[in-house]
Length: 275
Ligand SMILES: Cc1cc2nc3c(=O)[nH]c(=O)nc-3n(C[C@H](O)[C@H](O)[C@H](O)COP(=O)(O)OP(=O)(O)OC[C@H]3O[C@@H](n4cnc5c(N)ncnc54)[C@H](O)[C@@H]3O)c2cc1C
Ligand code: FES
Image 1 (spheres, rainbow, N blue to C red):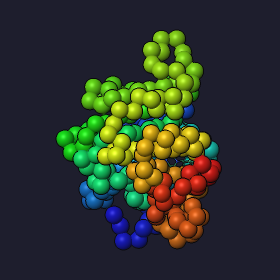
Image 2 (image 1 turned 180 degrees about the vertical axis):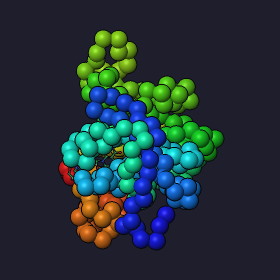
Image 3 (image 1 turned 120 degrees about the vertical axis):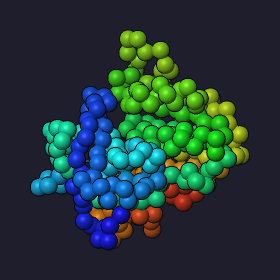
Image 4 (image 1 turned 90 degrees about the vertical axis):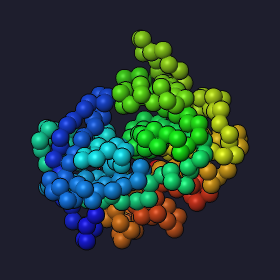
């Protein structure tokens, strides 16, 4: 996108949507039309978002690259930077550099059945991938989506989930049911007996907390998924975002540059380590 990868560019917050009590989606557009036009990414890539005088955070792009003219970030309020962002209004400016990382192997998965498994805010990068697969629907086989969170009020992207359930085999599951909840109750691993794909010609894309990976990977391997067909998006604390500071290593790989998406045969036991 730019010659000096450390330079962030101003972007305007066009729209803010409250997804759940502590999570908002920000629709952004670079001030400079040329920067916006050149902003190409794969689902699963991330940007470094900064607020002047506060700090910088890595955030996955949650919209599909098939959307022109803007992009979306779905952000959970955590600490310094994300709290400052939650105080901003539509029309405010932030700084963005990127996109960085590799993203999900969706090009290489054409013709395959696809299983998306998301836990919590892990649906954010997968939403980009799911919308991408929806856009190019005929290029993929059967698609299943398993999405779990603590409570129904925590579930993200209601508008997308309604659409996905018309085109894909989609299940949402909550650990604690609330009044009116008609979906499944339990953990995302409880959905594994619903897998109805041609496993030998399938790819599984996972994004969620490390503990989810620990149990889901075991289940996927049990039903016949090969290590190289299981892809996980990892989080590590970052500084440069471009493979220079060595802050984000996983074994001998860097999450910012070699990831954040890795196949299980690349990283194995590193999947369940916290940032
Ligand atoms: C590749 C990648 C993609 C991510 N995508 C998303 C997303 O789509 N939505 C979302 O809500 N969160 C995402 N995160 C996590 C997000 O970066 C952290 O929640 C955020 O950095 C917290 O910053 P803070 O200043 O609010 O919190 P503080 O706790 O005050 O953090 C201070 C600083 O530590 C660093 N830091 C803290 N937690 C993390 C973390 N988990 N990962 C990396 N750096 C951290 C940041 O530089 C941050 O400014 C992603 C992280 C990575 C590595
Ligand atoms: S954040 Fe600097 S090497 Fe990954």
